[in-house]
Length: 241
Image 1 (cartoon, rainbow, N blue to C red):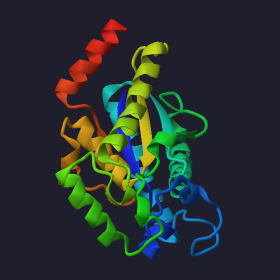
Image 2 (image 1 turned 180 degrees about the vertical axis):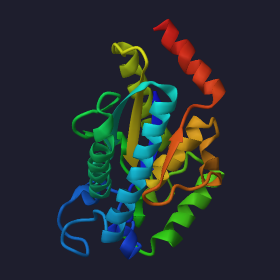
Image 3 (image 1 turned 135 degrees about the vertical axis):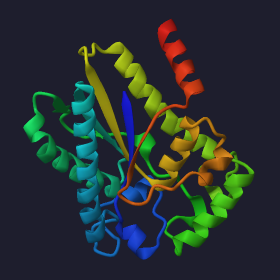
Image 4 (image 1 turned 90 degrees about the horizontal axis):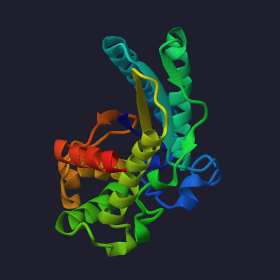
């Protein structure tokens, strides 16, 4: 099973340098600068279409080189900006995979996954400028990944829920019959901090180090896997179940 992290495209919240991190505000379809909530900006839609094609090409190339069939599923945070992103990715995948229907299967629908939501930033919700406020939280993260200063969701709590998504997919795969020679690709459409913290955990690093990794910019993707020690632990657990 292969995991790809895909950060949402440039959003109307990014455009305003505004923190929109609660489920209530992130999923709304009214308000915001255009009266439609805080989905993607026009810039964001364009950049997602471009990078979604590079991801599709990557999947096609890998499938061709390994001669494995590919099954692709898309999981997304319920926020408007991630739903918009996931829809564009799926549309691009349909187009790119069309000539490869015998070897690549795109699962129907988008799986909305609550645990891929944005990290909650507490009292900084809806405030600007976002970068200054984020930096305050990240400085505290580097000292203590358990902290909840300013009412924010702790790094540890984010780690628990986002790694839970990975484990749930792996357990689901263990329980399903997988065709011989088939590789399952799971594209996780989420947010900057949630994906940063997930990468840190999969690398086997403590949460206070999450800003030491290269940040995923808007509409960028990255394939990831558990570090060798954690991968071995997962395989051992799977063999016992």
